[in-house]
Structures are given as structure tokens and as C-alpha cells.
Length: 108
Image 1: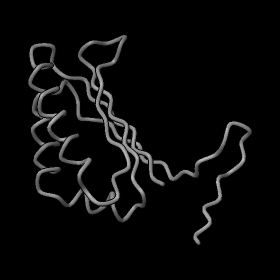
Image 2 (image 1 turned 90 degrees about the horizontal axis):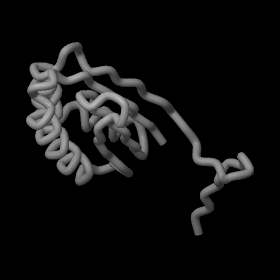
Image 3 (image 1 turned 180 degrees about the vertical axis):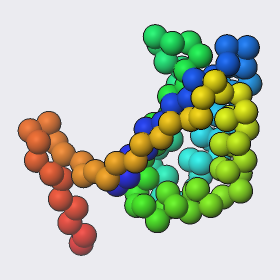
Image 4 (image 1 turned 90 degrees about the vertical axis):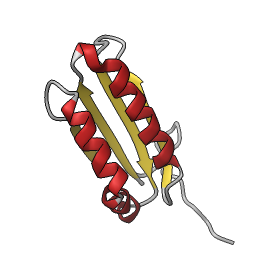
């Protein structure tokens, strides 16, 4: 699984517009193959900072997401509303239980 953590500091006068285009992007992205979860929220400590959390089944699905013209357009539009370029970190991960044991998927 791939986890994406992103954030952007938006100009204070543009937070409403940035949130609206972000929510539209999230809704569209959730319908893409391989998207497990995709969300955006407002940072509780900094009201003009949007935080994105995504989970993708595989890196190939995320790469396909990046190639979608609407995804590129979203990044351009969001960047135009930002105080600085958006930040994004990608992580490869495995799910574990509360005891730290990796889940094993058994196909039958």
C-alpha cells in the first residue's frame, strides 16, 4: 500500500476556493482504480493549511492518478492559491495489527 501525506499553506483570502477545489479533487480521486482512501481537512492549528491523506493499493495506481489531466490541473489551480508550493511525501507501507504483527492476506 502507498500512503500519501500532503499539505499546502493557502493565502488566507483563498481558503474557501482552495477547499472547494480540493474537495472536488478528493471526490473524483476516490473513484479511480486503486484508490483506497483520499481525504482533505483543515489543519486545526493553522486555519489556512489544508492537509491531504491518501491510501493507494499500489504505486502503479498512484502513478496513473498523477497522469489524469484533472489531477495535474488541480495541482496547478491549488498552487495558484498557495503561499508556497504544496508539499507531498509518499510512503510504502504494510498494515499491522495492534500488536505490531503484519497482516497476511490469504487468497482462497
